[in-house]
Length: 485
Image (cartoon, rainbow, N blue to C red; front, side):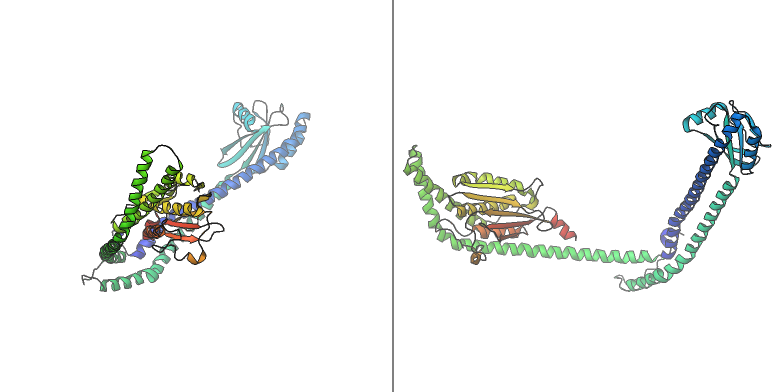
């Protein structure tokens, strides 16, 4: 039987066994080996302690040649599990009880081990028994060596017994899993899935029953069909939505063109008059190179009329010209610096200190940089007009964590600020608080429409000094994350 055609209960049981068996076997073996190693270290520690005590007890007797006392001490501490012997300087057996089972290793090896670790330890098998042996210098040296051995045969048998017991426990556990998992999966998984398969098959578009050995295959097939239908429906909805959006944009553009047509005749005289003045003042400037008061007055007039023409042309282009927005990831810091550089001469002329504090982290936004720069230029021009020619400050800063997934910029000036009763009207088209002839009332209206088209916000914020405008735009990648969510 192929694995893919098995019932889900059988498949679940096999997967559980394949996962649990290696883990259980490894854990049991590791536990048994660790316990045996720990017990071995304890026995080695006890052997070293016993050897140190025996060494101290025998040193004086060996120096004085009291061999009866040596025999008595060794016979009293000795047993079948723990035996001791004395070796001479050449590592030959010097004194031991009868039938001593250990043969000492070569002298060179003993010397090297004692020099390295203070004692020579080794395992020795004799007469079917396994001994742990340790050799160290007797006393301070010169009296030969003391050899002590402990029988570890029982420890080895105990380790094998532990391993066998662990394996038996693992086998019993896996057998229990093999019995319980199919029963539980049949009651809580297989039966509900079988019922679900029957109900899903009843909604099949083909009207044919699929007889599959595997419940998951049938459910996967049906959900795949549903997914295809949903994807097709989603594509149709997107196409319809894009069609409606294009139609709405065309209608909005048509409405803007109609507005431009209505306003064009009224603005014709306003545009023609500044052009005439500019032409006359320019000819005067070209004719005279001396900077007398008359020329200075003419330059002021030229600047004023150029500002008026720029505002009107910008308004007409924004309302009357159909322009597709080209968006790309742009660092807001670059647009701010470009705006500051563009209006640097005007700011110096008005003695306004323009600063920006935007940090070292890129402020990436998906936008049309030309349109966003137009917004920033409008805000800075309004600030320069508000501060006047007496000097002041205009500061641009960033609020990084104001809103998740957003880039927020504050535009603060030290001018008179926006009166509370006018905050709801300053974004209306043709509404302005500037003196007659200095503003068209379209700067903030156009700026807000651009920001809204970029899914952002342009608002007036409370400020203790001057006016404070807040521009909030979605950060780069936020739109994609929103669509995925």
